Image (cartoon, rainbow over all chains, first blue to last red; front, side):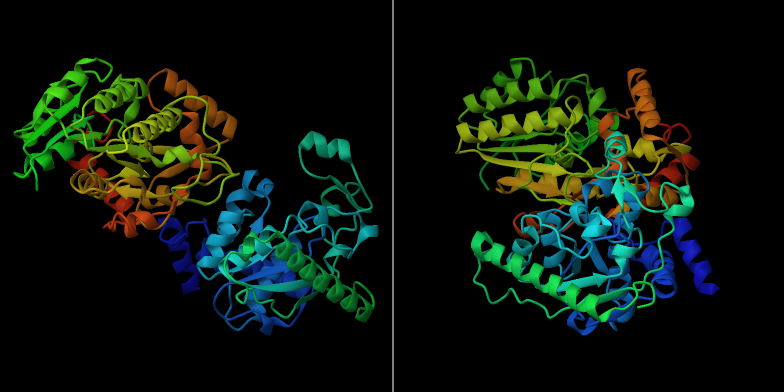
Length: 274
Length: 328
């Protein structure tokens, strides 16, 4: 109770710290993460595997598959890192520009520790020893149809690999199973998407049929597995400028994530019961 | 130190005027010429002491004569970064004239220009923190920021033509403090503060005393290059309003833009599109070069500068009604 009052007083007087990216640890720890954690524990019953691969301190780049129509997988990964890891680290996520252009969502994303997915921001975060999360498939991954589930899409242009090489940060491949089932996208309404100027407009068995009710995510059982880190400090300086190496590393990480996904899927029984 | 003659433009305003006052107190500087289109306030003129005030518009060719006859060796061009819009002077044309005059005069060995961090723009599509190497993004097609970008362009061209001159460009973040009168200082002292609904910009401030100290150091030492100048840390617009104890009124973006335009054209307040972009997205500058190459550590953080300003305003409202409402 006293904590709550102290928190309310801090918020009312503007007496809290925000970093240069707009990250507000006070708000994140007291409001945003607890909200997400209830979804994490009770709704998706997330099981985290290999959290010891995430370093307790120093920079690292978590690279994960993206799915689920809405980026709940990113938020759940942030909770996983914060809750399951003894160091309770904050995952600094790199998001699409669409997020930061949107009213309400943009500032909220910044306050929760996200920033625009661009090379300068990624390198600045990694240089200052942060744990950074990136979903290189972008809209191609999150907006794919249900029939393409767990098939990794193209991995951008490998910008995340060059950022990790330049800052000598470890790359941690991360596979998320369960997010594909929360909003099974059976089709998309492209004209509507054009009208609203968004990358895709999802049609699921329940949305837009049931309206707001259809926006409730289905309670699938989730697994988040962090893999063996890929070291980047053994390469000589300037190797970020070597496109062959960047492409090879990108493919290697993509392959690792795909294999982990396939293994988790064969182990999983029912998508909702696990 | 060899004898020197310093010319300061924008001398009736902050920080030019305060710089003149500081230089006038230093006996190692032979002569100080203070230039502006309007005469300085009485108290500022008194503090300028032995400095000579020349009332001339920079667009007037007279400025070239002043520079060549007085054998000016250091030119401090400080027309930007105060409350810029009511000077009645066109900064770009004035700068062109001034630079042309400097190019002619072989006595000029140092040029210091105040610019603004606004040249980096403010948008959702730009990176969070700007370094001196970054190109501007999302800069509006007209107004104050465009002027600043053009002004810097002319300064760069001048630096190419006169390679013997040490050119220092200082890109200040928003300057705030108890005394300075800027768009932001007027904004935060409004009884209710209109904000942009659904957006919350990141602000980085520099205290007026730090800004002045940086300008003074650039004038005295040889420190060529472009430097971002800003305090440590960040305040969100919403957070600053709460610290000030004011109430925010969030307006939808189109309403805020229209209202800003109306107020601008009625000359009641200056809430241009650039200001609304800034309130929405904000901007933060990387000050590593300021610390390492310029060897300057700001004494006030962003939060401290803001609190100092808030205290000053609160005091002024109690003691001098009328001061805080914007009349100078």
